[in-house]
Length: 284
Image (cartoon, rainbow, N blue to C red; front, side, top):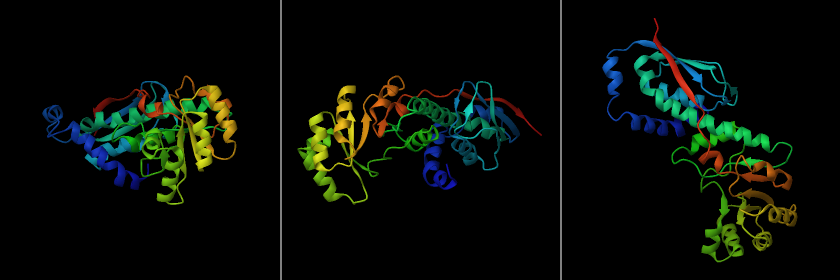
């Protein structure tokens, strides 16, 4: 992440996370470390995966004490292996102790998402289909989780409701039909925004095409229905496959020739990558 992104967008969330962990004081640290003392601690990988979130990890400590220093041996997006030393953190021991859990929470979560994303991207290799994330993110973690998806090699879908037009089943119900929903969206929205429509049947696909949708989502369809729909759509619209797409079934989709496949599992089901801060000791 850039410094501007961190300061404008990430800092409020990181500070909130730190305040959640320290309501008035870290009573344990203050009890055993009443005075400032320089120390060093190592960031160690406890399993193999893709590293992501180093800038956020560092920011936790520098928000507590901007004199904290780091020696980093790996970059975001690189593979790491069990037992590997990723970084050394040097600073006030009290700062290292207070920031440890919050820094690791971000780094482990983001690295877990990047790791799962990289695995799913590899399963789609050889096809034109691009892997997308969704808005199924942890509240107040979207900035970090969507960044992790990008580091893992996939593409971000819309960031939030302001970012793009996606007419889903309940929008269609509210408007009365796909045709009416698309018309209303086109009348209201700036011309620079594409209109995407979620469909569940071939009849809905036909209606979305006739209404002029630029992207058609095929939601929770069978393999054969998706194949029929993509053939029907041709080059009249872009296609996105969605609905319970996981690491276990994503490879079955690659032969369909869709433009995109979106997976909420990237952000709502990725396990953390186990990382640890170890070997804390005073330094001269």
